[in-house]
Structures are given as structure tokens and as C-alpha cells.
Image (cartoon, rainbow, N blue to C red; front, side, top):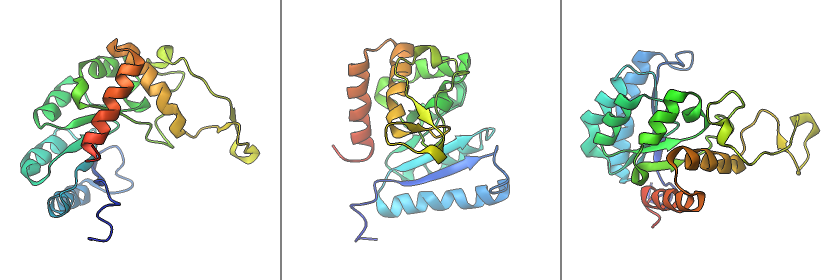
Length: 199
């Protein structure tokens, strides 16, 4: 554990996902999730968390173990305003990507995230901002794509969300929150450094 301590920045990704029982049923998820809090407490590392459609189970369990970890981020957040308030009351960061920006309701939630608790991400290779997304109207930077069988270093791979698409998330969130892009970039960068104990 000590040899890799400076290489590991967080425990996770861990949490609950009730939309993906084909990977782990509810009972298994509920049994395993608490083990991650033990690891976070043992290492002193923050938690990188996942919650999808859990009907309150996620917030209940995190609340139960909240004293066992220093910091946490609920990444790829797609919950409603009620869940957002629950998570903010637990002093958690909220991670936003393309999946967080699909609907008008999602956009209302992103608008309500305090700047000091906001992180932006791509969750590559998934969660891009698609043309069908409510946030697509705010994207200004567009890239050229090719099929993976025709790989070319000058193009992105079609159907794969790439790290450079973080700029699109920044553009969308900047417009939604009415914060200049450079200011939002600096704020979320500082939040990331703080969250991962790099500041």
C-alpha cells in the first residue's frame, strides 16, 4: 500500500448503479459498496463515486459512512435537484459531463451546482455531448471523426468520447452557468487540485 500511495489519488470508481444489474445485482452492489469506505478510511484518499437511479440508497449509505472519508465526488451526475441538495448537504463535489447535460432538467440541475463544488469531466470513452443533447447548442468546438478501422492521428475515433472533448463540456457549462470559460476553467481546475490533494 505504501509504495503506491503517491500514485493513487482516489478510491474508486465505486457506488451503485441500478440501471446496470447485468453487471452486478442490487444485493451484491449493496454488500460491496461499504467496503470502499473502509478502504478510503484506511488510505485517507478521497472517494470517486458513482450513483445512477438508486432510489435514495446511494445517499443513505454515503450519509451512514460520511465520517469515514475526507472528500468525495459523485461523477457523471444525472440526478435531480432533490438528489443534488442531498449530496451537497454531505459536502460532496459534483462531476459533470455529457451525460449530465442531456435534458432541460439536467441543465437546471447543473445551473444549481455551486461553483466551489463543481468538477468537469468527459468520462471517456463514454458520455459525450451528442447532437440530441439539450446542451449541444452551447458547444462551439467541433472535431472531425473517422471510423476506428481507418485510424488517423488527425481525427478522433467515431463513437468514442476523447479527453479533448472536455473543452465541449467546459463550453456548455460555461454558457449554462453564465460564467466566462477562462474563469470556469480556472475554478474547476482548482477544485480538481483540491479534491485530489494536489494543491
